[in-house]
Length: 207
Image 1 (cartoon, rainbow, N blue to C red):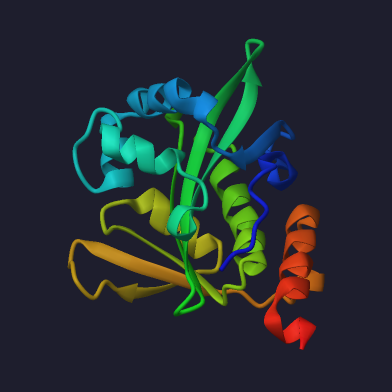
Image 2 (tube, rainbow, N blue to C red; image 1 turned 120 degrees about the vertical axis):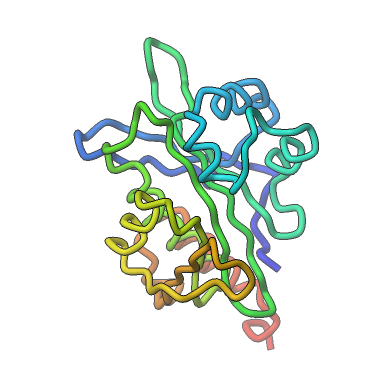
């Protein structure tokens, strides 16, 4: 189990920076984000939505929207990256990830608003994900994408992921990366504390 204390989501927020130095807040999605999250997906280009969901959709179906808004259910989490744009907090990227305890892996998928491509937001999100995965006790993170999604493949390659053929679908490629950070060495402060707390709560720590 993750043992994250989800009654106060704000403690797990992080501030990242774009390549231009602009502040990006990464936080768990909240019910108040429902309309903004749907607007975000509607605003993505057709290609970006297809790459994200491996199919043609114009918005999040009701069931999937519900899943995106559930935090911690079945060890699945959604985060949004927001920036202040024209005085309003605006979602510029999203990432959904899931812990698989039986294999000590975290699976993820993400997207970035087309208008913010090239600002380093996806790269920063992947670095942040490594902290989150390590705090959950994962040993590897992995994702999969369409073979035609050159942007995601390039991002994964530059971020140090290794590539393998997808076991079930020739149209997809899988990429994964080892997470080798002890709780005390996790570079993100909030996630280092979460990992140390998780370690202290583990049965072995109290034995």
